[in-house]
Length: 65
Image (cartoon, rainbow, N blue to C red; front, top):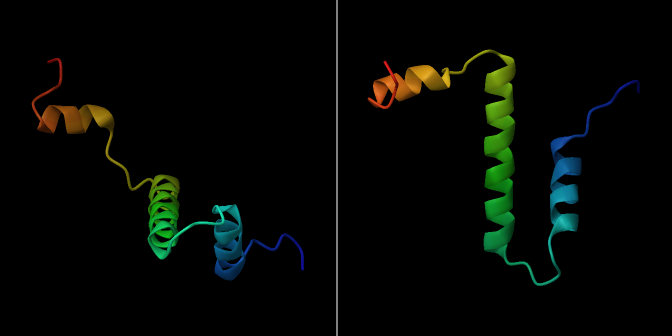
């Protein structure tokens, strides 16, 4: 297999391997959720599904106009 990306199962094993020995199920769930959010954000960024910071600041009334 050329250039095979890690599977979800392989990524999950890596995540588990990085946890301390005394980790709880809550720790596992938290780390998995954070990883999923980061990967979703990176995918959105790669697909140009982002909002410029300036636009958000303007919507919140925080922009220097």
